[in-house]
Amino acid sequence: AQSVSQHNHHVILSEAASLELGCNYSYGGTVNLFWYVQYPGQHLQLLLKYFSGDPLVKGIKGFEAEFIKSKFSFNLRKPSVQWSDTAEYFCAAPNFGNEKLTFGTGTRLTIIP
Amino acid sequence: DTAVSQTPKYLVTQMGNDKSIKCEQNLGHDTMYWYKQDSKKFLKIMFSYNNKELIINETVPNRFSPKSPDKAHLNLHINSLELGDSAVYFCASSPGVAGTSVDTQYFGPGTRLTVL
Image (tube, rainbow over all chains, first blue to last red; front, side, top):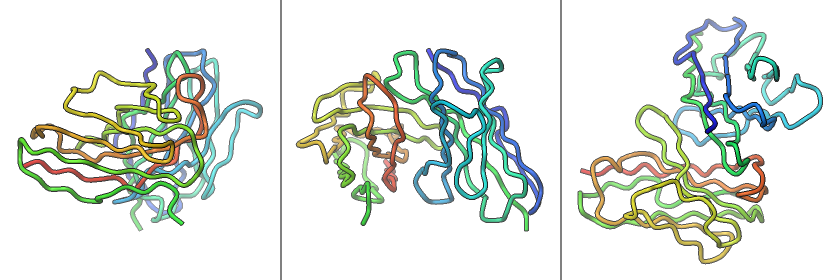
């Protein structure tokens, strides 16, 4: 079964700091990878996704993620965070049958003004 | 226009009661899902439907019964509510076909269920 690991449970940064959130998945047969963001009190929204092509994908609000197949990783990055980036971030990958998404446990990001 | 909507937004009820949550999407997607998000923000799939047909049932207690009257609607009925059912329930839809491929999922605003 697919498992998705997000090792950073809670990250606290000051504004303008650089961000990298880790995501590792277990089943290497998949290449459909997602990052979702959940702002306080809101629903999940797609931040970015990777299906094929350039392993460095860019998403909304200046976020990007790099797919490294050999490391089973899809880490999320942003060069300079803002207070409005405070949210919960979820990495997700399909299961073995490519029929459903398995979500990581999420990383809470708190940005201090 | 709201793409995926859910009602109600909040639901507070007593143990043992039966309740329903409704979900509608106007994106024209064939696939819809129900997820449960617990107090630690862990998100787990419960069901998925493709064009009114049940595709995924994640060993959810049979007190939970999804119903899809048409491909734009997926409702969730819960019988004999228990304390452990307290959570946020999210509906989602996707242009992908559940059971064959996974595509971007569009989530509703969530229903916060509190069982007292």
